[in-house]
Image (cartoon, rainbow over all chains, first blue to last red; front, side):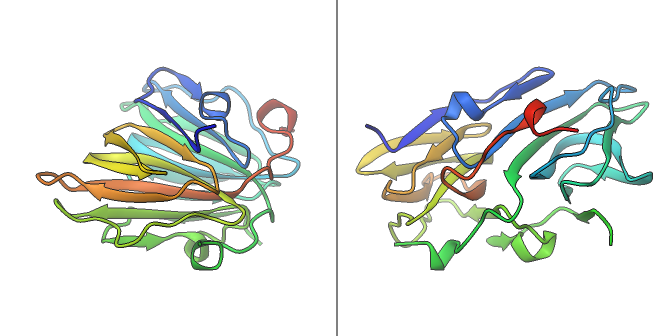
Length: 115
Length: 115
């Protein structure tokens, strides 16, 4: 069996990569909110931390009632307990990656895990 | 304690985000290889799967002697055992994210882990 799985560029409102890539240690989604739109709910997690990376555009995320502005190239890590909701700017869409991993699951990494 | 950590855009040959973002379930690096350059070694992993996302440019990765072309927007998941080496094109740099997670570590996710 091959040790890799590759896919090309993904588009659309939301694409989940877990099954497409055969992931076992993460879920990754690629998301776009049109200008003025928001994820229609506030959520937190039981076990997973999330890392968001802004691919393009502008917006904000509210974490535990604190408003944090987001623009291209920004990274944000949110702990499982953080109550979060994402918004595009009124005048700009926002595209971002969301990486979901189990908090505390990483042991050794990089040089210490490499062969 | 705050439930989030945010950083702005990162540049340079290689930036590791684990400590900057306080990650506990992943290591993420942002990497750029100049045109004609390569990561100067072949590596595999003991426990971690890696997911690469191409931010810009062109290049290739060799996995277990198979050559796979890479361009902007491509995603590739490489199993721990895959022997891998990354190259920029002779005439283009390549910038990519590498997400390193423990293979098999993700339990429930998305709707099943959300509150």
